[in-house]
Length: 240
Image (tube, rainbow, N blue to C red; front, side, top):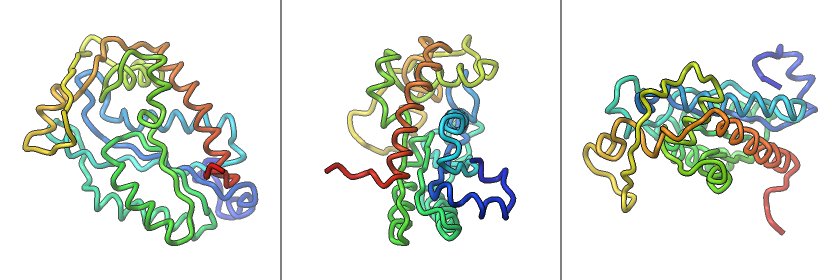
């Protein structure tokens, strides 16, 4: 149920169907020379479309939040960076208003790693209101599953490039796909980290990506995400 497609009256009438809402979160950020700036928006968007097809009457889907924390990649043209503390407050305000509209369970469907700290901060505050909040980071939470399909992962790497090829291959310039295997030894921050670590605004091996791999990723992960959504909706999120 796409929230913005309903009138106010119809929203109120259909609230009895579900008190669970998905908020897709992305970023506008450089993804190599071959992927669009909206890569982290498009993946959650497609997951939501597939979720709507499968369980549309069981969950609300709110409009996506397109901007995110992109400090590392802000050295590359086209990246829009929102500091974590600003993003956290904004996301909290959105979640609080959803809660006040009787949507008691919130799932952040996140497409961008830089957003994680902000989403954790917002989730803590929303939980204090009485809301149940879960963040799904699709490339991270299902890394094991993705690696049954791809040889590796990375920012604008094989997995993300495959995902966008499946989303809309017209947006991908595979002739510009590159490789970058640099990885930090520790969780360390330093000057020019983004330019050094994410050379050419990417990591991994984008040249191995295919549309077929992207299709497999979306179909497999959608099944996993749907299961999680239904469990959260039914209050099943603690192991016995």
